[in-house]
Image 1 (cartoon, one colour):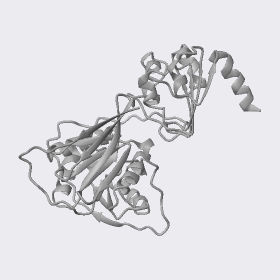
Image 2 (spheres, rainbow, N blue to C red):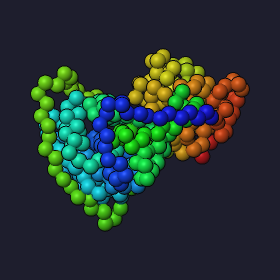
Image 3 (tube, rainbow, N blue to C red):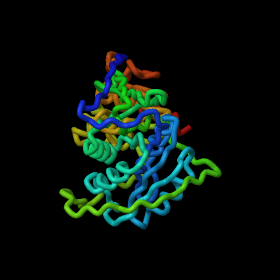
Image 4 (cartoon, rainbow, N blue to C red):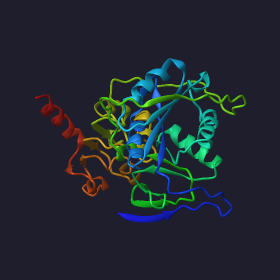
Length: 336
């Protein structure tokens, strides 16, 4: 695997800030109807690796914020939980939340701002950092802070995971923004006896928002969420049609493009990144875009008729065979 190195610099005319202070990270905790998202728990773990204080920010409607704050107060490593309640935050938009976060950072000691690499996090953090004239490092897989020179070093995958870029953010970047790849960090656990301080933050009213939330559509399923499933069975275009996906769950990009399955089930560079205990790839050739989303799985099992399929290069167990013959036999064995 290739490694590249990148160094971030601030503009020459930027304001200088004091260095050497211990890090104080602010983690944006996303939640869905009162349940904290697993990606945000991974972001909390990454923030703790900076070696300083860690605070969390929770926003939402009055219906859910109280419960989320109580959950967050019990998370290991949190110093304080900031929370802001407003009808505008019930279905938050980046344009609505940006003024709140910008105001919060303008009169605080935060040195880092962290979120999951979610759709919302990837929209919010770059928007806020651009307002503050600093960059955002996205999809981070490791983080290390050097207190002696107030610099932070990150690693992140590039070129669909075929190279790892090392990014150094020096002390001249007074607030360092980064999003975290959830599969690279364990979810922060709760800790008995933990009781972080809760602090209310006044919401910032936005009257001229250029966008409007219309509706949120959530696919209902008895399956576990793809990003946290411990076992994932994924099928490629070799399954031929949507009906055969009844025996599989999570498709790669080409299967979604062909209309075999919903794009919420897509694994890969343009879908979701997973790292389950077991990943079964049935009839998947192993295009680079798909490998970028699953090659960190603990055990990869591949079935493909093509012995030269790229999927076998990352598979721990590979079988060159027709999946329509193998899968029925496997199902029968599993039933015993």
